[in-house]
Image 1 (cartoon, one colour):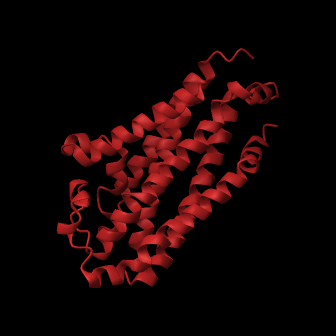
Image 2: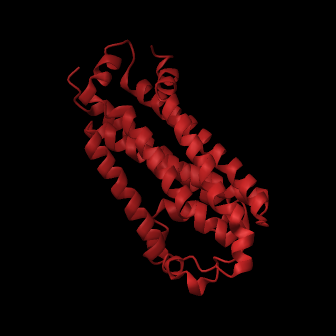
Length: 254
């Protein structure tokens, strides 16, 4: 059982992962192939898109700005966060259906169980990020977006790590409370607060948000930023350590 929790989690959630992967493949193809025609029509003029200007997107007409606005700051970002929160909330907060009791009745300790659940979440997030990235590269090529593939990979790495951070925070909430509704609410609150802090806060407040470290350096323009990615990795590790401690101390009545 100790060796099977990881694979069991992937097996149980494989249909959901397939469905989400299809969505991640479709979303970029809905927006990116039309970039060239929209630009030629003048539809990307920021003066006609005040909503994006209010969200801090001031370079909507450029290829990198359009890609950032449609995928890495809006639909792709939203879907990745919902994906991470949804899958992570199933991993620990399972008292309602009795699955957690069944697992812990086996010869496996809490730390190993949660570590394997986290490993499954990391693999699922990596798969989702890879599918999204491949679709973005294909859509950018069809739409004539002159954005280097390396920069797209850098932006996707930041988005994937951001989703993992939010997912690990979801694990932390679930490990501490055991209630799926509380877990979903807490994770959603953290995500919304981080998004608002990054888009509406000052320099200091923005740097407290994982959203800043994922996309604040404009990787679609500047490429890879090791420091930003390292901060996200550290944030995920800290959240995991807190989750392990909370889960190990929680009274599960088993």
